[in-house]
View (cartoon, rainbow, N blue to C red):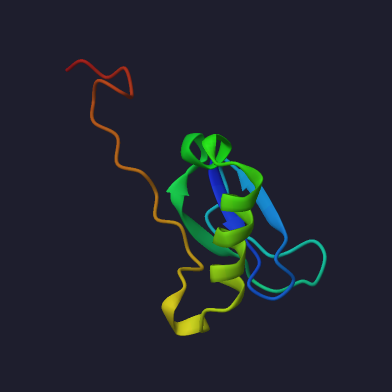
Length: 82
């Protein structure tokens, strides 16, 4: 599953699948985990994405999540059938 991260300082976005914490490649600051899923992100048009980036870049750090929790998989998703 892909996740979207947004830098609150320089507004750079990045899509990753395995990393739980991410630092910005442009400014080096920790990137915030976007609350919407990657599939929802790609369905947004450019103006909606810019609004989302604006919100994240103008929000206080205490209100942002910089650590993406690991997804919970059940035994069927892991192909474990015991």
